[in-house]
Image (cartoon, rainbow, N blue to C red; front, side, top):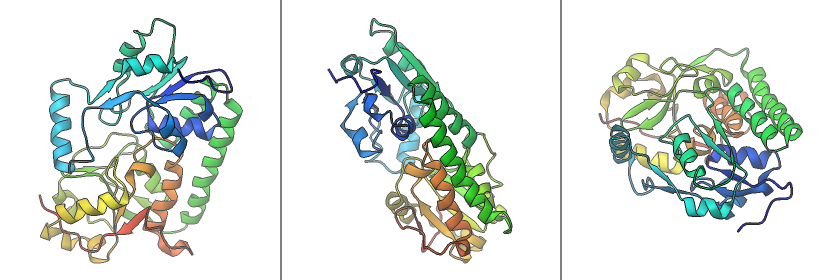
Length: 317
């Protein structure tokens, strides 16, 4: 059994963003169990693993992952399994989970079922953010639940300062049209907080709706929209993996008409760390987007680990 943290509360976080929040508010010492995807900060990887994925997305490409996900959801099957034995070993007082997306992480109902088998009262805190403000509110909720309300408030203030600094930079520039892709094959826009991030960064994404889930989009709609900047940010993918996917997927002649393609303003980015997870690093993602959309506002070049230009973009339907 894992030792109790310095504050006496045993926490299991089944959401990577919640784990990042806990460490950001100095509650990482109390984390005794995490999901299979909780890899930031590095210390999170040393915690007991509570979730077992039923899909190995590291061995599959975009289309194959999408097919398996759709098949599981069609039959009401979960993509994850809670290891109740591991959960018992963790012996939590608090479990943090999510209601936002059953594709991204284990669902709240599965967590409640597993917790009910522990034979002790356990608090379950479920997060369901759709905007940057929701993420900040979640940080406050987590802080209050674990006795770190003051630290949480400081983190929220620091994050707000980050996006206000970017908004100050982009306030007087013209808004560039942007398309952000959360998935490549089939193509999906990037919803929830991403259109808001684009706004802060000096752009507008008219193929997505702020605060609403991601949806499928046809490449013809992208051609008609004719964005000035395209940002590829597949959920769960690093910049390197995104680049690898684009080389395989893209071969659609009509894209040559798109302004972003003609001007070389198509970027592969680290969606996994800075756009998909509803945690503190979203606020760093705003700066990354601003460097892509308005590079003229920055003295330093874009870090290639965070985003890289895609040299040749052609898409295959």
